[in-house]
Image (cartoon, rainbow, N blue to C red; front, side, top):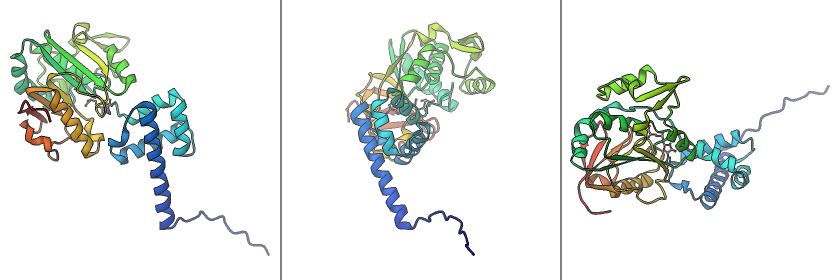
Length: 295
Ligand SMILES: C[S@@+](CC[C@H](N)C(=O)[O-])C[C@H]1O[C@@H](n2cnc3c(N)ncnc32)[C@H](O)[C@@H]1O
């Protein structure tokens, strides 16, 4: 009698797993080098776990068998490169995100901005533009938009294209209105948008005060000199050392006594920069530059 044995799934022992992980790490390093050389993006400062997750997702999206197979595709296919940047970057945003921050800005920063005849505001990592639109609305309500330029930047050219149109990626909803009210909004949010075919577009006179440009926080220099820099929910994807480099860049772009706003889940506590910035409102994540010296 012949007994057929069920085919067994090979069980990897600890040594096999360690070896597989080591190989995977080599593949990731090679891919990071290829991206840096080909596209000029240094990914080594992004949190490793997050990069790994995104690369693995791209392996599935691009229908290749391994990270190694992804490398030539990334080198030769512009479409694959664009997909990679889209995968790498989380582009989620919304109007008046973290309303506590906008409410506090109205109270603690707008009077400072008012003391300047002209103002520059840098919004780094602006994604699809909602943060810059919210800032324009806030300034309009305070009568300060007229002499203000909002410089909104991002690494992802696709989201910048979308942001430039002024059209919201999602139709205005109740949650947007609630966050706007919680931010101290004095009107109705829909007053700032025109509507066509269930799409909402920011009023042109507000959009005219926002420029959208490509800028890589990890590699490019200070974008502009500003009284207010806002970079929220971007540094969360960076490792600690890179977060500090980004904070140094923001510090150096602020005029003396200028203000910095970071994301709700981001912190300055582990940064040496904490000594150069005064905490204005910790829950709202608003800080102020103390010295005029560059670091
Ligand atoms: C989660 S969104 C945050 C959007 C907005 N700041 C907010 O809080 O709603 C993160 C944005 O950071 C951008 N980003 C990631 N790495 C960047 C870099 N090195 N330089 C500039 N922007 C970057 C991404 O493209 C993405 O649009």
